Amino acid sequence: MDRFVYLTFDGLSRGAVYAAFALALVLIWRAARIVNFAQGAMAVAAVYVGYSVTEKTGSYWLGFAASLVFGLLLGIAVEKAVMRFVDHSSPLNGVVVALGLVLIVQGVLGILYGNEYRPVETPFRRDAFEVGGVALLSRYDVFVFAAVGAVVVALTVLFTRTPVGLRMRAAAFAPDVSRLLGVPVGGMLTLGWALAAAVGSLAGMLVVPTELGLHPTAMDVVFVSAFTAAVVGGLDSPIGAVTGGLIVGLLLSYVSGYLGATVAPMAVLLLLVVVLLGRPGGLFSSSKARLA
Amino acid sequence: MTGVLQKSPTRSGQTLARRRRRVPPLVPIILGALLVLALTYVLPPFRNYQLATVGAYFTVTAGLTVLTGLNGQLSLGHGALMATGAYTFALAQNRWLSMPLSVLAAILTTTLAGVVIGLAAARLRGPYLAGLTLAVAVVVPSVTSTFDETFNSDMGLSVALDPPPGVVPMEQWQAWLCWAGALVTAFLLATLVRGRFGRDLRAVRDDETAARLAGVHVARTQVIAFVVSAACAGLAGVLFAFLAQSVSPGAFPLTLSLFLVMAIVIGGLGRLVGALLGAVLLVALPALAQTASERSGSQHLEGNLALVIFGVVLVVVMLAAPGGLASIHTNFRRKR
Image 1 (tube, rainbow over the protein chains, first blue to last red):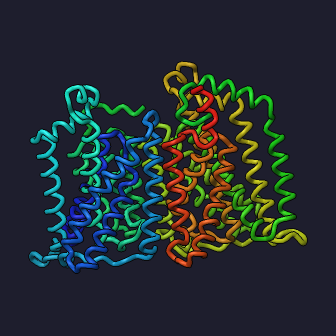
Image 2: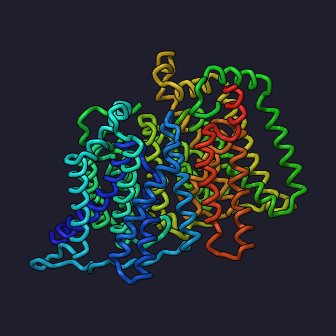
Image 3: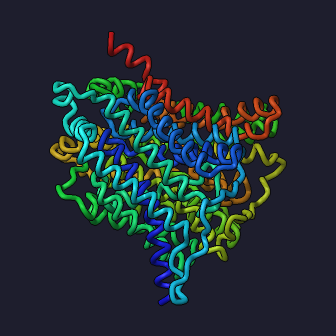
C-alpha cells in the first residue's frame, strides 16, 4: 500500500510534466493543424542553453529563465523562418519538415556539446517527505506541480479572458474571417508557436533532471509519452492534454514500479495503439473528429 | 508520381504510364546488376563495403518510397522494422547457420510485424500515423533490454556467418549479396506498382473517397502497401546484420528512420530512382562529413555534421521542391 501511494504521487509528478509538454503540442495543433514533431528537440536545445547559463553564472534560476526565453525565441524563429513556408496541401509536409528540424537541432547540439550524457542539478532536493512513515512527495515534485499549475492557469486566463487570447482563437478557428476583421493572423500564429515552445522548454527543464541526464536525444522518449498524452486527451483539447498527461504519468509510474522500468515504454506504445484504434478522437473529444 | 503534392494526378499519371510501357523494368535491373558486378572487381575493399551498404539502404528506401510516395502513408518506424529483421536473422543464423532459412525467417517475422502495424495504420491518417510509427521506432530498441536473455541488451548479438565461397574477398561477397537483395526487391516493386495495384495505390493516396467509389478496397490496399514495404525493411535489416556481422539496438536508432525518410524525400517521393539516389546519399554524405571532421580535427563534428546536413537538405527540399529533386523539371514544365 505504501508503495502504491508513493508510485501514485510519483506518477502524478511525472504526469504533470507530460501534461505541460502535451499542452505545447495541443497549442500548436490548435493554431496551425501541425503536430510539432520537433518539439522535443527544441525543448532539449532550450535546456542546453539553460544548462550553459547555470554553469556560467552558478544560478539555477538565471538558467531557468534563459531557457524559457530561448524557447520562446526559438519558437518564433522556427515559425517565421520555416513553418510559415510549408505547403499545407498534404499533412505529411509539416511532419517531414519538423523531422528535418529534429535532425538539425540534434546535430548542432552534438557539435556544440558532444554526445555524452551530462548530469543536471535540480533546484530542490528530490528525496521525498514522509508522512506517517509513507514517502509521498519531494520538494522537487512540489516545484513541478506549482510550475505546471501556474502554466495551466496562465494559459487558461490568456485564452479565455484576454483580447489577445480571443484573437488567437479566432485566427485559428476562422483565419479568413479574422483577417477581414483586422486580426493579424500571421502574428497570432507566431505567438502560438512562441508560447508552445516556451511551455515545451519548461517541460524539458522539469523532466531532464529526473531522467538519465542531458543528451541531444534526451526528449525522444518524453516526446512519445507526451504525444500519447495529447492523443489520449484528443489533440484539440487543453484539458484533455492535462488529463492525458496525468494518465500517462500514472501508467508509467505503476508499470515501472511493479513490472520494471524497461517495460514502461512498451506500456506507452500499447496505450497509444489502444486509444488510436478505439477512440482516435481522444477520450475527451466533444465532436466526432474527422481523420481523413 | 511526383510525390504527394502534385496538382494534376491524371496528367502525370498518363506520362508515367507511357514512360513505363517503353522501358520494361527488367532492363535497368540487368544493367544495374552488370554494373555492380563490374564495379566489385575494380573497387578497393572499403569501396566495395560502401557499395554493399548502398544496396542495403536501397532495399529499404525502395519499399518505403512505395509506401509513402505512392500510397501516402508516412512511416517513421522502418528503422524498427529493420531491427526486427536483423535480430530475427541473427537469432536464426546462430541456431541453424543456414542463410536461406534465416533470411526467410527474418522476412516472415517482419512481414508479420508489418501486418500488425499496417492494420493499425490503415485506420490512421497524417500526423496520427506518423506519431504511432515514431513511437514504434523509439520503443522497439528498448525491447532488447526487457528480454535481455534473448537479445543481450545494449551489447547486441554477433552473427555467425559462413565464409564466402572460394577465393572471393569478404567485401566483394557482401556487395554481391546486398545488391542481389536490392535488385530483386526493386524488380518486384517495379513490377508490382506498374500494374493494377500501383494504380490502386495512387488512387488511394490522391483521393480516398473517389478511390472507394471506383471500387478500390482502400483499407486492403493500405495494409498490403505497408506489409510489402515492411518485408523490404526486413530484408534490409538482414543485409545490415550481414554487413556488420552483428546486431545491436544502437545500430537502429530513431535517426535511422529519419534518415530513411530524408532519403526518399530528396530523390522524389514514389520513384525507385529517387530511392536509389537517396540510398547513395545516405552512404556518401556521412562519408564526406567524416572526411571534413577529420580534417578539422574536431571530435564533436563526427556523425553530427551529417545530421545537420541531412536536416538542412530535408527542410530545404521540402520547402523548395516538395516533389524532390527529380520533380523540379516537371514543375517547371507544368508552370510553363
